[in-house]
Length: 102
Image (tube, rainbow, N blue to C red; front, side, top):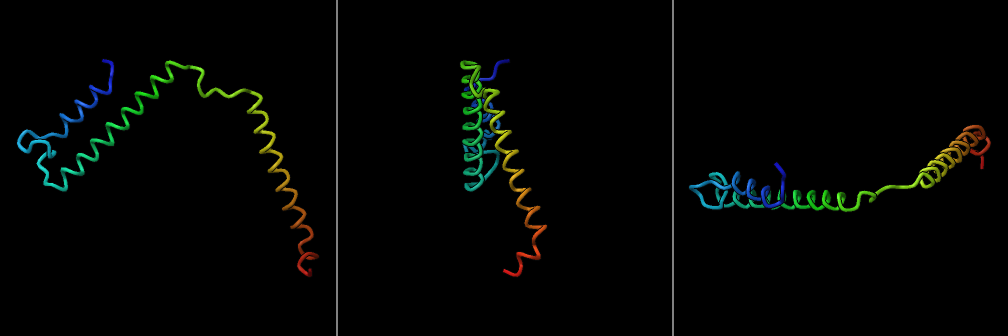
């Protein structure tokens, strides 16, 4: 069965509506009804966003791909930064006694 935003919305509304209390949620008072409504809106918003994202990914399958060159550049930059920081730490540890008198 294919999921759509409308089908999900109907399922959420059906699960959160109690027949004896109208649209207030399953046997809840006013505050509980607002919480159920807020949760319902959050679920609807989330499912709509997921559906839109899936449709966008199906429409543009190359979206989000990064090139090999970009990965190589990032790895080199991070490795260089780690090497520089490590060298500074080693030099400071080695000459710590001489630096403390400054």
